[in-house]
Length: 341
Image (cartoon, rainbow, N blue to C red; front, side):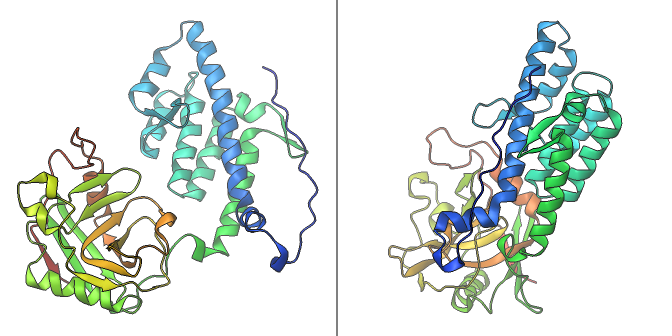
């Protein structure tokens, strides 16, 4: 198979920070992430080619096992996606088959998506050990003027990203709540979702939320909207009723002034729903995020974080939705009560 060729990196003269464009600042911060994305995409190109060639020869059984254990996502809907453990199990079961090395590669990519960088590196090292002659390991590419295999380049870039992230931790997570921060448990039929609240960062939002928890305001309200690319919405008093057309419209009489809490919309945070104007939040409705959503930064107020029970949140978000396009779950989960911990 012919190698893909790539242009050498263009020489760039860096200006002082004050003279950099926003795009230049972005590139200087996140170049390593772009490299990792490129390596993953290059892998899919090789993957798709070998898959088609193998199936053409009639050796499709192992590919069928991979297909049965994953879903196809990505821009072309040709990238298998599953939990890392599923790909790890396939890599062991299908060792020695055409699919074995690809299962290990997909395991590494799945771990990367969960930001488990050291575990992703370990999966790639296992790939090198088990399949030293595979194209992912043995075939040489020219990447930015340096020759090497896709696997070695990915390992190297993951190590660089780990080092970079360790010195820029604030870009990937909010600071932990201070000791003694208030904590609550949202009791549901699926289990408890525990929240730790940033009372020092968003005191008015936390105070209003705790007051409503104590009053029973949220009792029997439902998580009325779910979105795999965002998370779940809850807290609407209208969701206690049967008129689903009104779900998401209630509680708009309760507002809190917007505040810049210095917190960002990373996966796992609880954030207040926006009010009618830029200067206010709804005191009642909230969202729990399952994806980073930095488009919300500066628009909504983060006032807490899930400290336990994120698996429950993910289970709720992954449920089937109603067919009306509202994002309403077919079988909505209710908050039975909220207890202070």
